[in-house]
Length: 303
Image 1 (tube, rainbow, N blue to C red):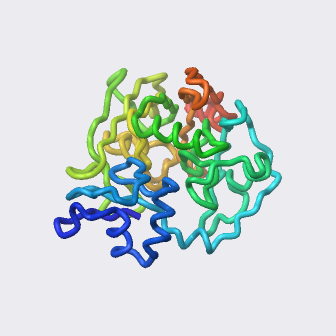
Image 2: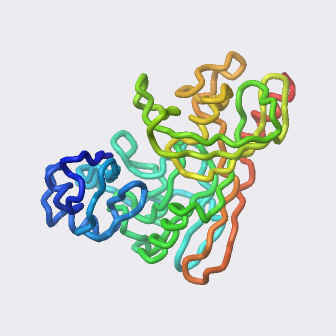
């Protein structure tokens, strides 16, 4: 949920503002703020007395869902790339939802890591997102970082906010991109025609995506994207904006006659580089291209 601060509420305390704008008690909200569950302009604010500014965006999840869902651990196999006492690096498969939500109560990554890590997960994002510091879409595969304690969570979260990490994806898009490389730099906001989508707008959150061509085919292009920001559906929205939506992305690009059975974007988080929260060592992880992705590439080469 996002609330824009108008001139009547500018300079109010964060806890007071939220108590007036939601049905939650002030004491409840103070605890949520201290736990790092509230963001202002994409930055975690952990002080209830923080004074909000005009046009700032206060961001938080609907806490009702935490009581509606009974999240249980499940013995689900995980592709673990790295693990220590502070972080767990997972190669998430395509089709797996990251955390429980209405319609996806079981079989999520959270159910799996709860079984694997038991009680060793950060609690900053609440009972339905233990350990989750960043997310990728259900149909996107690849590298995810899980945090095992609140110290690590705050540290890694700050790296994502300040963009000191490196995140690279590979994707297959429709059509032939002429330039060998490029940068898309604009603002993203909810699409007024379809609230499920993000779209380039005059007002919103700044989003920057660098891309380069890996290989061109007859009707498709294989690309690598590096995120310099981390907005919802950023790569999907940006590639649609330049006229090259991701293959299989029904929300942003529609059907492809030669790939009618695809019902999800062909997008893979291939590389993540972070600073370890305890050792301060720079570490990187690569999730090799999965079989489904290779099969699509081989099919495209034959068209």
